[in-house]
Length: 536
Image 1 (cartoon, rainbow, N blue to C red):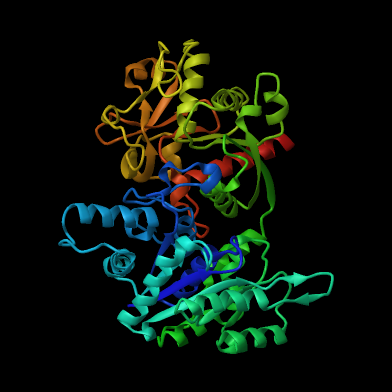
Image 2: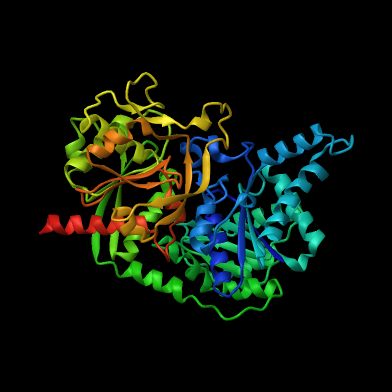
């Protein structure tokens, strides 16, 4: 088992996650089995209760772990399903250590950062490797070198190299080489300082990935290699790319996979990048342009909906469609503005979320899509929004709402799940992870999946209220997917609409650039058809 550790320096936002994901993809294309993890230094136990404005999307794994959004990059790039051993926070580390201390597991020892905290981190890292059966475990360390809260994480990976042998570990450091426009020069000093900071903590990087806006000058490359004590070909140029998924091929121009294998003393077959290159060709050769409204409440931070956006783009790749996403703040959609805001859209998506802010704008968007026959896809909250809209405007229940938004409504068509009534803790207490769904034949769901039984990831506490199920069905709302016991409504749709679908789950988490999720592919196909009909 080999381990690759990816750290970052100078500033945040240099693309450590994309670098780690790209390395994973390149090594997978060499025939190796990869597992990935992200270690985050914040004190929250997990990102599940964090504001999307601060943290972005909460990515949910198959086994129900609420994790950092970088895990989405790992899954999409490497085409793997990760699990609870793929994301660790400082908060979870201290939580586990304190719990063990209270249970007497340390036999009266004085509990300290070293060795107890670092041992907890080490055990977690090594467990990912042991449980996966992978050849290589890639671990990204969140934050930047020099951050106080990251120090135990850095110390833990230093110790791992000693424990399992430095020949079984590879340290990749992502850093910044700024270009000073006024003098026309690249500067290596920030990288030098960052590497020296890392070396002071006992880690010598094997590979430096230099984030640059201009091609890396040979003299600067040699200077970095000399002062940072790495081989010249181990200074890898990381330039801007037009498409996110170009990153692996851009890094491979510097023979990154060959260098990684050499430094890890591994042999592997030649690269087979054919699948990835075929996907890139699809991106480059798209014929159509479609406009899709993403109507949400966290629009100011696009990372809050990153998996939804990527899944739409994946659907576009396989339908030859360039998907232009219009990020629309739901609070700005009113009865007076809805027509002007949505009139030029070819499709409407309402994603997941919590709380009542902006709900009425989402309901108006769903109504506009239904009445104007515009393709609509509702995800989790988006399905509940479609249900509320239908109840108000078709069933005539003017006060219809979710129990979450209006507990006093006489028509709570969305209700709190029974098992959630006794739940007080907010963290990791929702219905999380993969659950089965039975798909009804002769529905748009079945046309998309072409399977009668599917498994999708969930993250919710509220559900379709079965007390109103008969009324909905009598008025034309089709329930196209349910739990195997037929109790939980997993999908609703309209048969007299080109594509009006709401799902209680999050299909975006399982979409891949090389294999678009069937529901998003079907949605974008209908969006394209709508656009073509408009154009005549």
